[in-house]
Image (cartoon, rainbow, N blue to C red):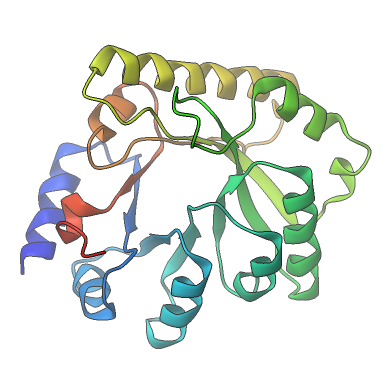
Length: 222
């Protein structure tokens, strides 16, 4: 019952227009089912193999989001069912998602991942790289992917000012891309930022999607 209670608590705290992606990595299917029975429908995983193994045994109406670094050779396994990929940081990856989505007769929603943290280990584009991607000759031909917004991960720190500054940077990046490239496209509306430790700050800074794992499922067993 703890998972159910955790979810209810979080839902009471956050605005209704913010989507919760329940990050279920390393968690067994029983835990996912418990969250599902509490009304949660959007789940996220960050390892392709783990998601591919779990998906067939879970309810078909789960909306799966892939939130981790994605290798191009894994895209074909996710393309039949994944709803959104949060972590597009290269044109090569976007082309592969488009190709595999086309072969499945689907359109897959994608977010452009930006490097907003001070940590070097995080993946992501900078603004110039994003502009190059969008302005490339190939980009307009990618009809089986839909860029629906941006994603970023803040530095893992207790310094609230630092976290807030990084989320502001992502919101400004979203605003720049919206006005410059996607002004007429209603589907470009998502800002995926904020996790268990910082989702409240992210919401204050404009997040429309938060990715919450341990606050729902408890600490992970690696």
